[in-house]
Image 1 (cartoon, rainbow, N blue to C red):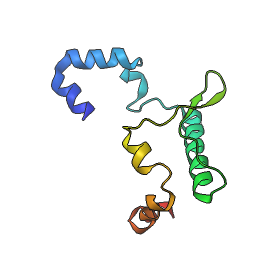
Image 2 (cartoon, rainbow, N blue to C red; image 1 turned 135 degrees about the vertical axis):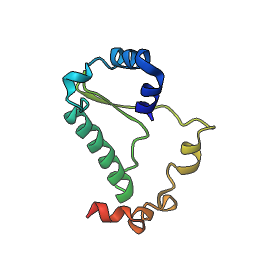
Image 3 (cartoon, rainbow, N blue to C red; image 1 turned 90 degrees about the horizontal axis):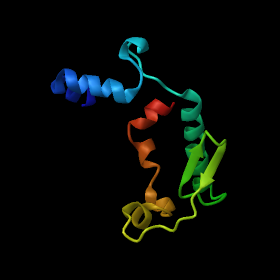
Length: 112
């Protein structure tokens, strides 16, 4: 969708995208930048919180913010908002969340 918007936007849209992106497309050899270590750290935090919640070791933290620039993981102490669908309807439902639905669907084939 983004690529289509740039193409339909014409040369000016492409120029602005490259200016905002910060890296010349010719320098990327048709790939994009990726910070593998940060992606891995954030994914590991998510998996760990999921496992802690599912196994009942402790409740998962509501919000973790990985600050690589500080070498810290910050834990939010904010209370859930009363109008938040996720906070009211999904968070803390444990069995009601039915995480096994992913195993019943075709996604299980990709996990093996």
